[in-house]
Picture 1 (tube, rainbow, N blue to C red):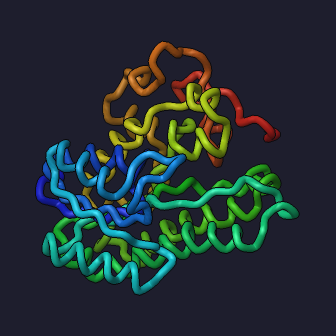
Picture 2 (cartoon, rainbow, N blue to C red):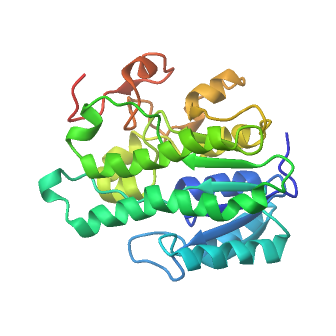
Picture 3 (cartoon, rainbow, N blue to C red):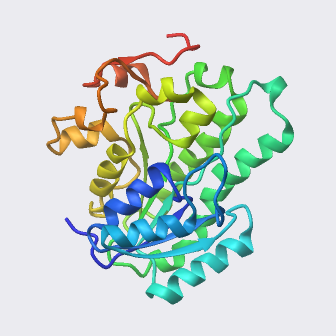
Amino acid sequence: MSLDGKTIFMSGGSRGIGLAIAKKCAADGANVVIAAKTDKPHPKLDGTIHTAAAEIEAAGGKALGVVCDIRDEANVKQAVDAAVQRFGGIDICINNASAISLTPTSATPMKRYDLMNQVNARGTFLVSQTCLPHLMKADNPHIMNIAPPLDMNPKWFKMHTAYTMAKYGMSMCTLGMAEEFRGKVAVNSLWPMTSIDTAAVRNVLGGNSMAKMSRTPEIMADAAYIVLNQDAKTYTGQFIIDEFILGETGTTDFAQYQQPDYDGPLMADFFIPQDWLDKSVSKIIQNPGYEG
C-alpha cells in the first residue's frame, strides 16, 4: 500500500483527526491540501493551515494550506482550483470539517442550526461535487467522509436533533454518492468506535476528564490509511469503524491509542449501534445521558 504522489484535498485539517490523517498520508509522500478557515492562531484552538502544512511537510509530504469557508461555493471552487494548479489533479477528497452543538431543540438558535447544516451536510456535498471532475480522472479515486453509520435509533436524536440531522447529512452523502459513482469513485464513511481526543472533546464535550477516556487521533489516521489504499472500484458504500477495520487487517494492540498512564474504561462515541459496541475489543462504557 502506498499513497506516494497522490493528492488529497481535505476540508478542515488544521488539527485533530484531519491533521493526523494528513500526516499519516504524508509519510508515504502524499500531497495534502488543507482547506480550512484558521489562518491565524486561535486563543482556544491549536493549529492553523500554516502550522498544519509545516507538520505535513515535516512528515514527508508536500502541503498547500488554503483559506476556505466550505459554506461558500466560490471559496470551495477557488480552493480546488488552487489544489489542481499546484499538484496537477486530485486523487482523494476527505470531508473532515464539521460543526457541533449538542443542544436540544428549544436551545438551538437557528444561526447554530444553519451553521451545522451548512458545514456538515451542505459542505460535504459541495466539496465532493467540486472535486468530482478531478477525481474522475484519477487512478484510484476516493471520497472519505468523517461521518457515522446511519443508525436510526431515536436516542441519537432526542438530545440534539439538529446536530444529528446535520451529521447524518454527511452519512447520506456517502450512501447516495457511493451508488451514483459505483465503479468510478469510491465513497465511504469512517467513524471512531470511541471518542477521540480533539479540541471538540476538550472544549465542548467534557474537558480533560473526557479526553483521558478518549483515544488519540492516530487510530483514525491508521484506519483512514487502510481505507484510502483499497480498490476504489469495489470498496465503496461502507460505513467503517476504525477499530473494526484495524482489527480485520491485523492490529491487536489497541492500547497504543490510549492516553499515557491510563487503562480505564473508554467513552463510546455517538452513533455506534449497541450490537457494534458489543463486538468491540475496548473497555467501553455507554455514552452518558442515553438509554439502551
